[in-house]
Length: 562
Image 1 (spheres, one colour):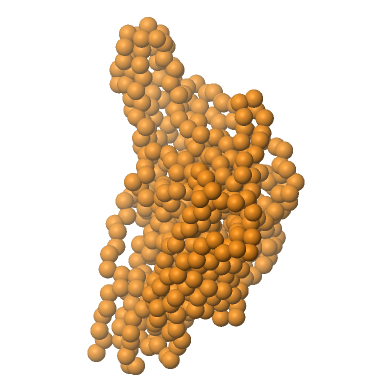
Image 2 (cartoon, helix red, strand yellow; image 1 turned 120 degrees about the vertical axis):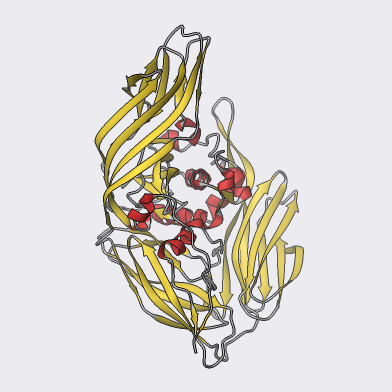
């Protein structure tokens, strides 16, 4: 007899008709949509002049065309049509001039056609300064690219001088570092706050990415507009990074997209900082305007197409063994004759452990590459049993689904196996903060030692026991740190890891505009040897919201115990 074992027990009802009409958004290359934006407010006081309300409206770009546009404001039974204005950044505004008080509602309705294509991207050597777009290189209120904590990450973790490697790396790291948390809406938190909290919504993903990119000398602007989230349409924030050889390149670290973002990103404007993106009201003395900060977004999908001839995906039905980490492999191929930064993610039935569900992959022109996910089902099976279910792969391509079968474990290695998932350092006041993320991938408990050395002299030694299949975060604080290099050593079962931390400089702009420097710290990339192979030491294991939604979208089949 067959025994049914539910691994996926909860499905979410999708919240809009659009969710039934569109596939997972990462796969959408072209879209035709009718979009209605609206917001309400009140004008009060004595009507002694004209109130000017400036509202950001839709933009035309090489990828985005406005088929039709209506912009009106209703007040006291009257209809006011908008005038058009543009700001210094090239954004368009609908301007409503109102000469009376009362409650009002404005509505912007547009039919939009958008088709995204891979840009022909050439690399750029970041050892050469990018001189263009200085207004998008400087620190701002929410994007503190000059601060030590940001520069620490940017100048070490992303120490390549390749523009393409830097952008792909920052998009990937930020996507996995920050956990999506709707509790951070509607406030916009700064890059430093996001670095400390490790949580936020789209604005926080974008500001942290922009701060890191600017710290690397890459002009970066933030972008706003409606986006489909795989559940509903909402206002969203992402970024554009400038490449002198390729122009402005889109980056959405919330969804792990870079180089090319899907066609559900409907652009309304770009700015140095999100605080610049607010609607503007100008009223005479004695009159007051209160405008709701929440804009309603309604979208009707007219038609769409999924990506084709950008990448190809090859995946097989696969068999794995229970109670051990193994690789699940697919082949991705770049089908365009240009560099391509491709998002790629996996959705598995609940019950699988997986390292880093989604990745950002930099591909050379026409390059094919094998991509692997380390997965495990931590369940004991009898000899006559197996588990079977479906996994899905999502990228710039219609999603593909394949079968995964989990067999009873063999006599596989279950000894302790320590891996360094992440190591980064920041400065807080006079203290050097070193954060280390470890995981024991074996079944048995493991002893690990962390040694901090300065000038060949041991500064601190920490011993920890990490249980089987367990993660551990360890923090070291060095008060009044030396300006000389530090070395971090991690020793334990199955691993030997070292990383160097070297004092760097923080850029500070004085009141007269002159630049000076202050000491900060930057850790240089470490090396890790495990089971005779060099492993990636920057893996993070945060399950981002985007591929949790994938699991809902595809309603993956339950694993069946037979």
